[in-house]
Image (cartoon, rainbow, N blue to C red; front, side, top):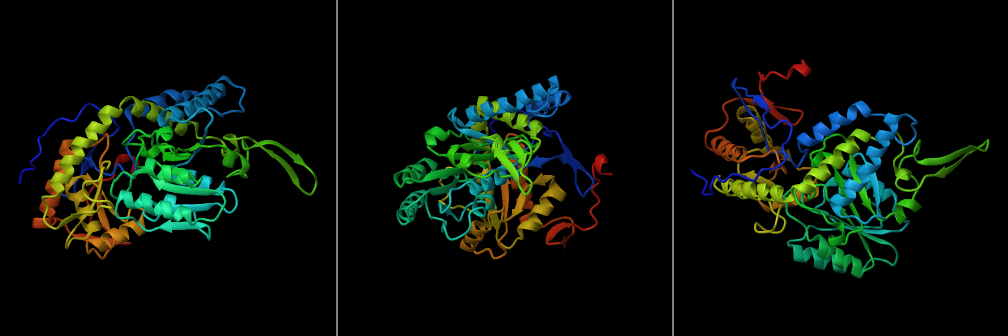
Length: 444
């Protein structure tokens, strides 16, 4: 069956490392890897790789070294804060604190809240945004049926919060369905109740511009590995007062201005934000990679968004032709979304299909509950799936029309004819029985 969408060529976008990677199949052939798992970790931008290679000869300690290489590394590290500010249009006065990833950044923010802060969030959140906030002052709102309902229920919830500091936590785009949340409208409600709002931009930042001023949010977090800079970096951007008043997230070198010995105790004067929450030797390479990725994406938003729009329309149209397939959605099929689609196929185990797609077709997708167990469980109950696992295909700069068409064709073959290989479950995961695929030489 032919997909009724023109095979148009997507606009030129920045290149990624591994775009020509060929992977082995259990049948003996090698094919181009169709990476449709960008939502988990995006590949490295070629420009990021080149920038890291350029920096490595100059790599040295940051902030406290007298050598010239150390001065260069320090300049690189501090200039990265400016790149991040431009990327999210943050104010010059707002803090930019580098972390390991989004999870680390949200845990840092959670540790920095004033005592008795009321926290309000939706249970559709990724675990990184759901789990740091626990206790009697946390209110979790059940997944709403529409964006409008989300705004209305937040208004009611905040109105019933006790007097005191309040924080709303919301995602920019669902990592399960790709649907874009009404962040500006939620922020307006939060402002009306004197609350602050933190934006988990991990899944939004790789796909759409994030403007913290236009959205009127107080904090934004995202990860380098989602924005094509997989070198172990993340960031928290936002108001500095709560961060400045909090004890350091980690204690050690860099977070201290002065340590004195008083016999039975140590006296400590902590550094100001951002160094206050960046103890230890900074990940200057990862931070530089993140900054370069921000700069590159910031120059190519028009091409990036159009590239994804074309592929997403083709993907959803193709999936709609597969018998028994149900696409997951929080707010309805027509709601705006980034290039993430999760689905189930009646009568077919998601993990089994994912294993066969990889082993027999060279296609990488994600299966499971995507670190959003509460949301996925509710969505799958709604389509009658009881194993609480789904398949997720996610697009990005490394995706092509051919990748999308191969996925649709492979799923149709697996559903109608079944796999050509035998599979077994080990530790809850399906894998080819007697898998003959050779590992790359560096793992030999």
